[in-house]
Image 1 (cartoon, rainbow, N blue to C red):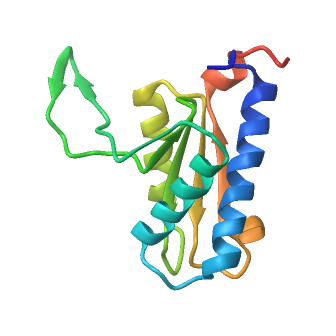
Image 2 (cartoon, rainbow, N blue to C red):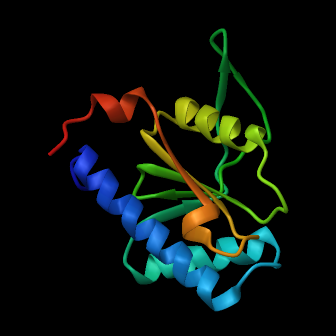
Length: 139
């Protein structure tokens, strides 16, 4: 795995967004989230990125590991969490969920996509960073 720097994560973000744009151009809006997830996974693997999907997000509460049914959509190169939606309107809770997953999994960056839109680049994606990202070297 490449050394984590802000520059590397920004490049990886660019590639992930490009893959999502390709999927959206091919399929358009109106399908189920699982379809977009499968196609984005294929597109990222085709670009030779390491992907894990639908893995459990562990919850520690006061030193106790809880059995919870939380899972993330995609993790790219063990660095960037990707959450996918196919909804009429994005809700603030989706962003809060991604931020929480980033914190629980100690990942520096996340991307939230909504494939149910006209232009995924302009209106269908939001990139989030946290303190882990800010603490990384820029180069």
